[in-house]
Length: 127
Image (cartoon, rainbow, N blue to C red; front, side, top):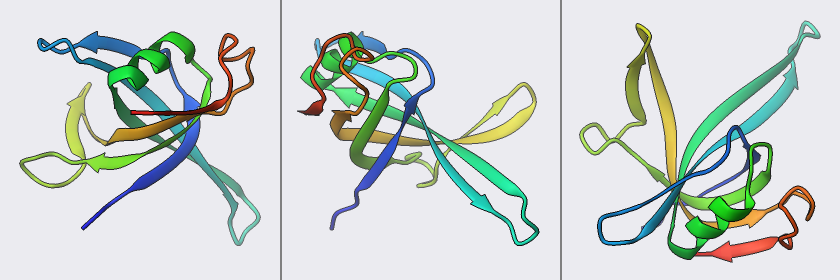
């Protein structure tokens, strides 16, 4: 069995990279995807969904080095669920319960222009 997710969106903040105790690089991306539609009454609605994306290995280093807040990316990967519930991760923030969609990336494609990615060519950076 296989599950896969593809999202295209923009980074909401600069990437955050760290190393595991074994020396493996992991970079976290906050990616916003948007959907716009018009209701039957003519009202335009814009919905934004935030994704927390984990990128591992050499791709993690590339993402950390070349992506910045606002960079457009295409991410292919799998949804990461809460191990206890099998659902999106639920948390409380300032007294309000929220949930987050998380995914682990298999591939990250840089979609922003070369100048936006600091001279790195557009393209796919597989894990």
